[in-house]
Length: 99
Image (cartoon, rainbow, N blue to C red; front, side):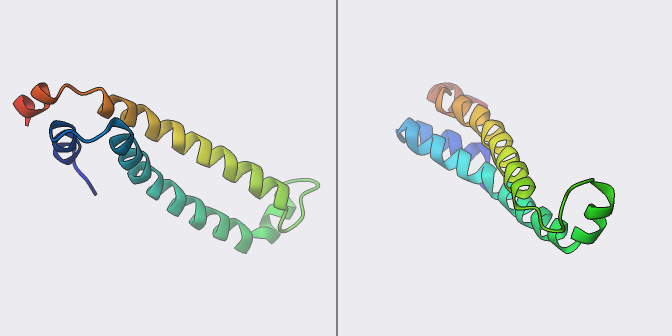
């Protein structure tokens, strides 16, 4: 996992804002996608239990899995984009002073 020093170092060395933005979003989305994969696999494995708890849902309701997956990905993107935007706005001299 990359640290704040790595991000600040890239900014100080003149990395383009798009590169820093991409790096932070990709690093933030990795745990989101791993958790989503584990969650979908668990929900598919426990499909029979879900059918008894939720009226009208089949054991592997594709619409529900798709909608929930899209919501989780959207929240993960927003949660990654905010720090990524802040990382692109960091002042290189201030980053050097604090590290």
